[in-house]
Image (cartoon, rainbow, N blue to C red; front, side):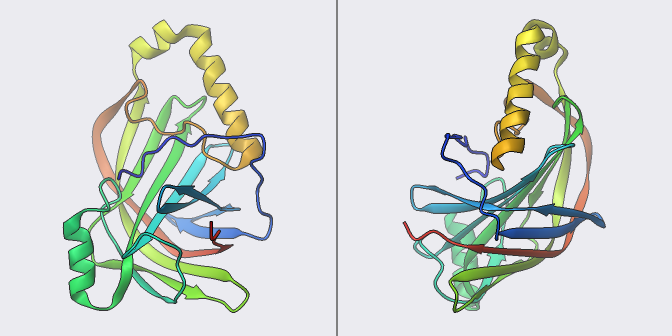
Length: 215
């Protein structure tokens, strides 16, 4: 399952104020109030901010993909294709992990959503650590290196999309800002082209605190 997913924003979406996310992205602090998204048996954590739009997503899964109920380490794997048999087998064979995790970061570098910097975690033998508190809250800590790519809106998308495309992007930006959910922020397959340039995005001192939903 790719970390690229459609997030449906409903009128009932609320930001839980006592959730927190802080991480240094290439040394610059990114803060947000993360939320949990549940799709099927999988759970995602997404933290977002506006001006510019930024999104940090964490996918985490135990051996059954269910609720995290014990403290431990999760092997960070390829964020573009995390839940493969090989990734689960490697984590299980090492004997010290509770499951696997994957991370994706998206930064709007030219507004309104014309250019992006995108980073995916890789199979670099890094880990995300989880501590389950007696109050039901989970603390995540992590450091990892992401494979960065750069994206630019295609000229054809800009021209043929016209004012309607700009209006849609501004609406998506407003929804992202108001709800804390990343509304249509992904450039892949959405009228953008990936540039040849690549780089590394370093995430350090990552700390997330939230209560996971049990349903």
